Amino acid sequence: MGASISANANTTAGELTSSKQCRQTSDPSDPELNTLPRASAFASECPMSTAERTTYASECPMKQAEEGCDIDPSNMMPPPNQRPAPDQPFMLDLGRQVSSIPRSGADGYWTYPSQQMFWNAMLRKGWRWKEEDLSSTDMAHIIRIHNVNNEIAWQEVLKWEALHARECSNPKLLKFGGKAKDYSPRARMRHWLGYELPFDRHDWIVDRCGTRVRYIIDYYDGGEVDSATGQFCLLDVRPAMDSWQNIWDRMTVAWARWTVSEQQESTPIPKPITEESTKS
Image 1: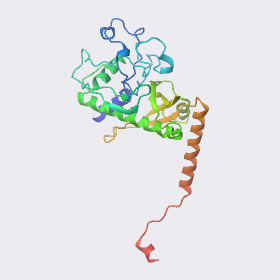
Image 2 (image 1 turned 60 degrees about the vertical axis):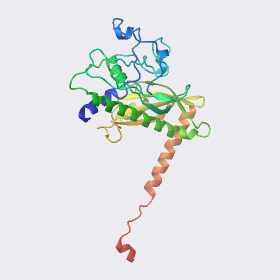
Image 3 (image 1 turned 180 degrees about the vertical axis):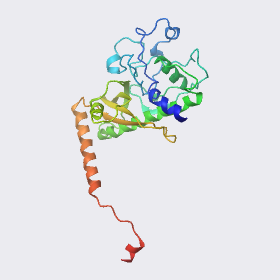
Image 4 (image 1 turned 135 degrees about the horizontal axis):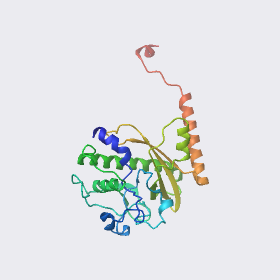
């Protein structure tokens, strides 16, 4: 995988499943866009949306779902495209992996994109392949990284949802969107304190048995890709402070973290058992 994957992971790992290119803003001469089928004919894709570019409008479902684009409003994506690009240097796998993330409003789970769909999504974002960029093997690694980090994000969401397990034991993901350049207040405050800004942000809308709960996920660069787990970024997952219930949950968890940390610091560390101590 090497340095090429690390260099490309930050710009591609969230890029697959949400493109904001609407027909109104795309180049009408592009033959591929003109031949795309309607979004309603396809199932939705992966719950991780695009690392934003400043040349496109926001992907966030709350901002784009009603603007008449030829996209699925649940994930803000154009129709799935499994066709090889005209200048594609090698063939890519078309297989798609089913995630562990239950999908609200439909039976089953969200489905991750194929290597070919990921490649086409990168092209839609303006990326162009160069011989030193990626190989077919690299694409397999990128898809793995992408999927693993989505699974981690969902597990972090479930930790928060455990606070409401009595009222809803089976939360599901309703929709999601990317807002990479729309930094959250928390990310901005961290930046003012000298920390780096996240390279991406996603908003996930969770269906808590009929109640919609918005989660903010900030993605920070975690350095080299962990070859064993496929994880490459640090996730900051929390409910948005847009309801009293979310604010209360944030306060509850903050208090629990503070008190547990204080207890751990005050707990004396037992001395290791040695031959000298047994004699005494």
